[in-house]
Length: 356
Image 1: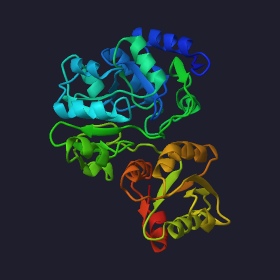
Image 2: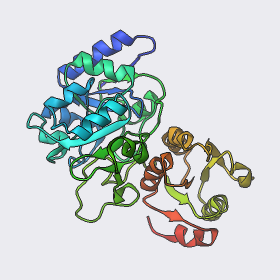
Image 3: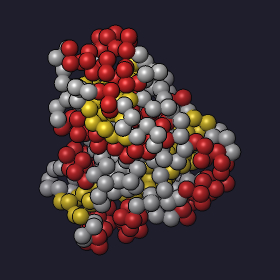
Image 4: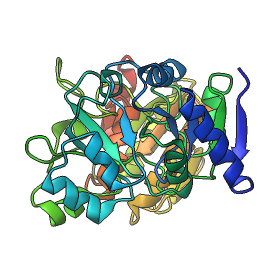
């Protein structure tokens, strides 16, 4: 299959028209959002939804998010509660996904046979135009090979899915760089996947919103994944990833790096502006400012892909405080690392000796 890429900054109407045509005929299209690139299909067409799972190599027990172009479109898909309405009014269009009880029109393939459905109205102009032109809700996970770092540029999509999908709509780099916040409103409100809309922002609108334990830990054995990004190893490059945490993040990162190099591995540190001076003589890539967690969020996935492209065997990430946007960053970092965390330089050797 030939994969065509259309630059929306140059040929917006052509790209949207071609994307909508493919969606309407039951095919898949990669498109930009403000979070990451999505791989979309008609959410109400089970055969089209199956093409998403096939192209990505995605397990079919991992639910999808349905994207709409107007909040009123959710009424046909789910039971909209008062809390949901308040959150939609406050944060849509934007990087917030809401989980509600689904209606029968939504096929089981889109929800992993769950009685709930995840819905979102994106902010990106290209995404909204594609949904409107298609005339159907678009089911879309990230447009990458399952388990890999999510794509924040069209080039990332092509690196994973070229030859597997017919069209990529190139809208340039994504604004946020991490997937949407997912909050369930079935039962007590809880954040299942952190993102740019923080628990504090949600609580200010609807009252207390808890953070699900799986936001920063693996699912318990037998526990159902109610949201994308919960069950499987996600966001992971080919290299082995470690997280440097504890009181002295830089010293711990340096110890991990030195241990990897001593084992003959090509290693790098994804560093901050504040710590990079500590890494003299070591290979590092500055991806953010520790006082502005959104900078880490925006660049994490691209940096992981860049390190993979340079054939690094080990990547060391710096931990951030797990609050506000730092929570979103740590959610992705922990899963990329398989929850492999080192909290002091003295622990580095034992962490490095653990089997994958």
